[in-house]
Image 1: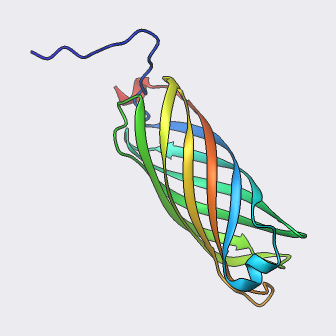
Image 2 (image 1 turned 180 degrees about the vertical axis):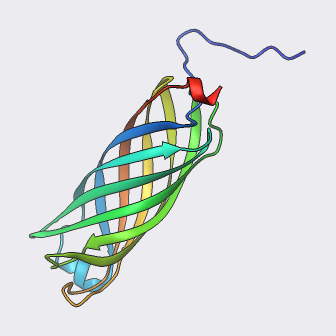
Length: 173
């Protein structure tokens, strides 16, 4: 018989099945390519965003994210993505997380949200309380070229997320 180790003051995640999450995103946006983007923006910009998620099982969910990346020199990109979310160990206090998705974005020198956008990333969630997590995340963003946008963009985002999960856990038990 195995007895689980329970440490005082250490929390673990509740079952997130059939629960919604709301996350705040704060981080940096680092333009990495092409030359036009890196020479017409600052080397590091500010990234602010939100993620609205719904989990269909303890470790698998879908979400919609909106981010606004202020790249300096008057440049801003704004991707809106539908993302697939995966938590590797959803029952643990610390869990690696992965996300991948696509959507549309306002690109470099663009005034409209018309560019195709791809996003992929990984991070670690630490459950401070059963319904609250926080942790670092690294994402790669590709924003396509369009008629209105000057060029495509490749961005690395180094972010910190704080998430709150709400809704009843009764339906999942």
